[in-house]
Image (cartoon, rainbow, N blue to C red):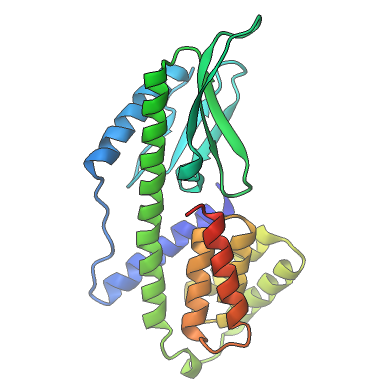
Length: 261
């Protein structure tokens, strides 16, 4: 599981607990008819394509990922739908050759490292490929909307919780220890260790502006731009007149572009 997935799960738990403690309802998710149709299409088509099952993970909430096995070499790989740039999803026909049958291809770009991916299979017709491309786009947009729902709630909860952060007591010894380890790991470029240590601080001390800023930068460096934008906005909520506020705003704009909106 990617570091950013761990941070996302932690954030979701924190948001849910906070809203419950305030007597508020945590955000809920309900799939639209198009999403249900897209799930069905993708499940059916990928099941035909893949040599193993299941290929389509949809256990909780909206669709998070597709686990796919390449029938040619048996290798497995995962596509996280929130990282698919919807505007890059295309279909194309690949003529056959002496060693390959004609096939339809579905391609897209991942916004984490701007890597290009595709599925290619001679068993698909043009209509099949177009249906898959449509379904992939619907689910990618749905996944983004779902994450944004929780991220907006995370920011709102953090804003309420940290409204008076300047008058809060300082960190205790354990929190300071995690904070020091986090900053050391961050400075040395060990993003996994830094992310873990920051998460330990935020469990009990979420109102730490420098830590929120550094976590935003860490998430941006790992390609989790939606999380990075949320944390950077939370940093600006706490210190809107910070000396680096203009820099923070520029990073938000940069990450928004990289998400492909």
